[in-house]
Length: 374
Image (cartoon, rainbow, N blue to C red; front, side, top):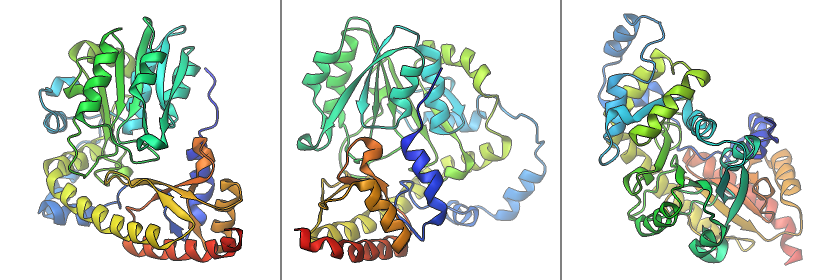
């Protein structure tokens, strides 16, 4: 099993600690425990007293009953026993791919997307075809092209909904057609659903539209708790039983403290979503205005998702552009070549509002030196 370097994570690992204005990350502004207590109406003393009396053993191996019940209630028609807790969504993706993909399998992956979804199947000996997103189609891939890629032996189709880096969303009608295509050959659909759309679109989970749909999610992006590293996978009973066997080889539990915080957040997820909706809507309005006023940039507006993919019209490789921007102005973006789309940058706008405003201001200052080119 040999894996290439993880392009986006390598970039962030090297550069994020030197950034003054980090508008590369795509989690919605992280909560503190104090903020979580305030949103949930929790008395901190009660929480800490409960924690102090909790044995620091392995805890619940698959996630506590309260955790599994709360997660199952985020879906329609899913039971707690169909939920397995994981170490973030990265742990969930790894578990699913490690459990189901074998040498010689055929896998189709949305592209670009989270690198796990195509490079892990390759490393396991699968033949992987890339299903390209298309700018002219609002950054969605063409379903007719999927029909050309699919084979009788296609084992799995991997998607990321909403898409990283573009923020494009597959709605119910699109997902239902996708499921129909997959069902013709009995393929699984693995859907990484960590980015939630706060738009008015009807966007169900893949597990709600397809029996062989496997949904992966976490508390990191949409729920603003990346620091506790809690995710999950939701699948039908047969697949969940397979995953249980392999999960024993990849992790034991997420940790009792993490599970306690996850329980609290999920019990009050609507309050967290309302807070995050406000952040996204306000910050997206700021980004919209900047895009409109800045002559050298453009974008297909994300579907109220915490990531955006911005085209920058400069005669310079994006990696060099982003390095110079960071070194001279302290602004961090992810260059589009890390997604094999040079000429673009991933811009995360769901950070602290002051960080976004200052970061865009500094980016505009940097762009002024390129005006003469245009």
